[in-house]
Length: 332
Image 1 (cartoon, rainbow, N blue to C red):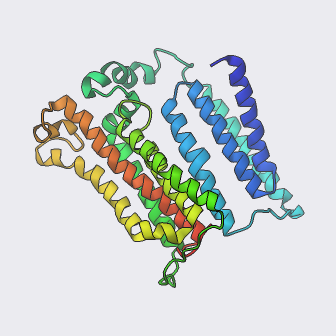
Image 2: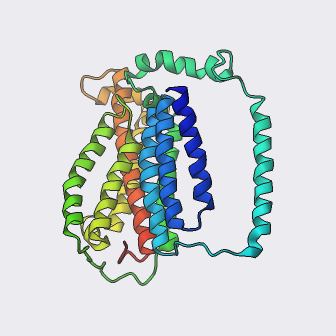
Image 3: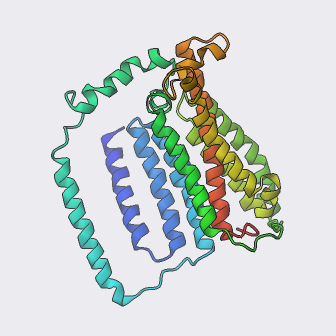
């Protein structure tokens, strides 16, 4: 990316960060924070981290903004000014400044940018870059690292998403929600028709991102967020009862758990065959016309489906819990 453009984006990101913290209207702060995330997408793209930019656009600028709006829907959008609260803010500013200075001091001990002799560049990264395709036949190096070489990390990250949804559900769920969800549609016909028109294309794109995540930027996490966003769009256009009839909260929890089971279960078969856990090459005898290397490639698609299922249900389940305040009757 052009240096002048990078400096401009960095300058705008810093300005938006300060404005989002300074402004008292929380709704305006959320919108500004969404703009901050969009600018970060451009920065990540300029650095060549397209997968990270994809995730930032889907999660940071998209779903996170909706989550904040859902919280504000059940709270308030204005901050009350308290003149006696100045001392705590000064104390927090001092603590942040001290921590920032410590971090800058720690940076001085790190290797210089692009140092070929640094541990990162001289050990595992060189092997990943040189051998990833021959080991897995996956052109997307990011997917090869996350879904194969670091399969344990990605599996537990999937569990974290499911636990987050389950934790929010348990904390906010109300005991008196036995009544059927209210089916309240918006009075705006344009919103409903537009949502119905866009959702199939959004979901088709989400499936494409999942299926081609090991060949191009994307994967189970990004595709799952896109699928979850399509359900959230329907819930916002038709309200909660309409989507609850399509997929209930009980089904969401079950499908989220199924995604974790798919990922963990796919790596369990090699253990019964005397191989290591998540050693995908052990699947070669069970996949038609597949050798050990292609078995690793095909297995990445299988575990990405599990990740997408959990992430989709996680994003949608968190939204449902937040916007309904745990009642699952009426939301935005």
